[in-house]
Length: 398
Ligand SMILES: Nc1ncnc2c1ncn2[C@@H]1O[C@H](COP(=O)(O)OP(=O)(O)O)[C@@H](O)[C@H]1O
Ligand SMILES: [Mg+2]
Image 1 (cartoon, rainbow, N blue to C red):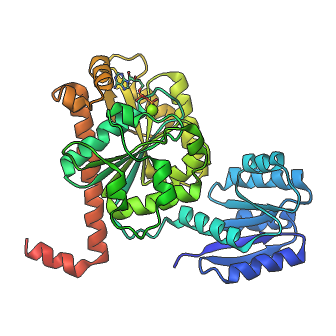
Image 2 (cartoon, rainbow, N blue to C red; image 1 turned 180 degrees about the vertical axis):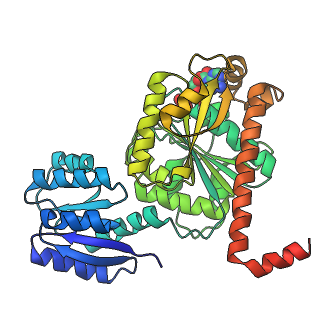
Image 3 (tube, rainbow, N blue to C red; image 1 turned 90 degrees about the vertical axis):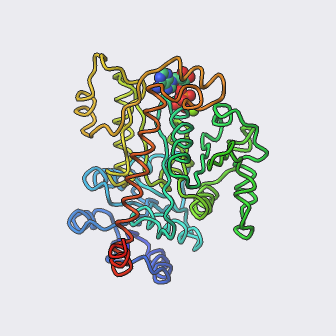
């Protein structure tokens, strides 16, 4: 089992002992060193690059935060958990800006400690996935860029091509429009589902997600009232993903354009982020910012795929320009096709139902094929590594 190599920094001996006691009960945590100040720990952190640093900011807060920022700028993979005896929102925000990932108020409650460490462990080593499901999230920190158009069309095409069960989930919790794009009036929404999900009813998800026409696509819409969205917690979101992974082969997620706790939980639970941009300077700058944030969040570079939407051959800014600016290859280009998309949105039907031979319907189909093929290949490769004998037999038997 992977272990999180952890440093504890606290000037108070009792606090250090308490954290060590909690840590002893956690299999995924290994306390490598203990310090009484971040100044004393600094050189060791830079040299040994632990996975985790749990540091108290009750005393010398500005100096401590400055050093946290200095370390996270150099070593982005180190995750900081800050603790404090007295604090206000302002100091939590400052700590997060300095690069801290989590905040634990003192006295530290054991349950909070365990939840936080488990979350960071998952972010570092990935969830122990027992299912083969892949979660694909369509994201951009700008609105009106094409997220909902892409997620709805992609989900339908993957369901049609793979014939496997696909869930399309609207995690634009406050202003979702998947239901409008697909012209459905679902009986249940995400707020109902997360509240009533207890894992005992096997058919719960199938009966609450809206089955789309005669396809293998199932849709989970956003809640009708904004207030309901506020009550949804990151823990509930993770639980929902766990349940979806059990029942579906693919989960396609539409998101909002804010980087709040909920969206980060969605991204943490995602296998592939399709980061959407259009070819203009402000959008590309925003895209750069997203890539920076993803790096800070410790995401693998391959997790994010850049998708250009509304692409035009004769654009002034070229694909090469975008690739140079982002220092990353473009994964996919979706053509600009105003008429098909407008007609599709107005009629509440995916592009392939409006005009299957249009360049945009074909493009969504090809994207779905390439994505699902790659995922399928990964699944096969994983199986061969895990179970060489069985697959050797399969190979011999054709
Ligand atoms: N490939 C495309 N070609 C032309 N127009 C598009 C394309 N994709 C999206 N649009 C337009 O952009 C608008 C915003 O798309 P939408 O999917 O709602 O974005 P988001 O979900 O990011 O806010 C739509 O109303 C549609 O007119
Ligand atoms: Mg949208």
